[in-house]
Image 1 (cartoon, rainbow, N blue to C red):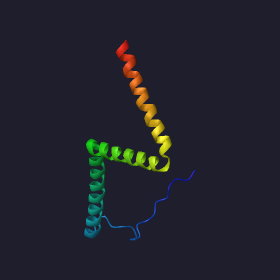
Image 2: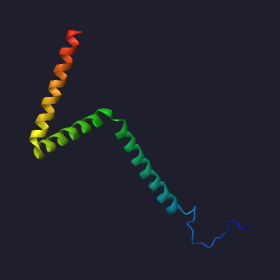
Image 3: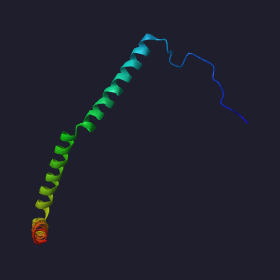
Image 4: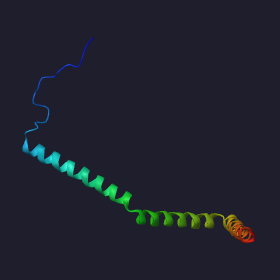
Length: 93
């Protein structure tokens, strides 16, 4: 059974005590952290995400209407009829 072989230090690997390398590593870590904080901020901004979703839904509806107006009108009429029917049914109970 063979295990991992150790490679001798030949100077080709990055030296963890090199100040320039440490600074570059810190900068890369800061950039990753900033990206993570930005993503979390976006995910937690519920009002902004709700607005985005509403705009996307509106854009989709407008595009669908432009492509096929009779279908959209038919669905809207059916939806209004369903709501009126439910309201009338509940008021008679």
